[in-house]
Image (cartoon, rainbow, N blue to C red; front, side, top):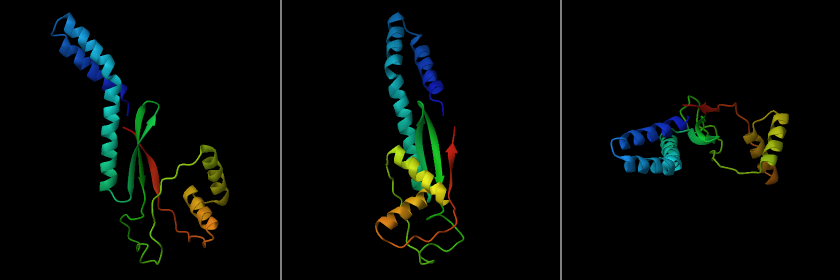
Amino acid sequence: MLLAPIVEGLEDDLRRAAAVGGDDTRRVADVLVEALGSAVRLRFLDALQQAADELTASLPGTAVEVRLQGSDPVLSLSVSMVGGASSEPDSAERGEEEVARVSLRIPERLKAQAERAAARDGVSLNSWLVDAAAQALRLPPTPRRGSRRMTGFVRG
């Protein structure tokens, strides 16, 4: 989503509204346009984040995130069948453990190495990290299921 045309449109609207006044009104409008540009962008980003949070909360198994690409927001949609509607029996019926979602922040270099190791082993990064944690805790490996995850980006 490109924010520049939206912000520029609001700036033009403010200048047109000020044009009905005198020179002082136009000067005040110009000062306001300069001062409000960044604030308007932040308010749009806040509104997008609130919308993403509401969508995530209302759609089980779905995560909507707002990411910045340059100075413009990009909506990212991740859909997981874990906890979502599926014709297969759920994890409790299959005798599996429930799955918990965790946000993990690691250095980019470590992430790149883990991605290479996962690719070498022919598994997803998530599966590789679960296996690494299980090994570190001396737990048995987690049984594998077929991948049912979809990821992608939604651009406006």
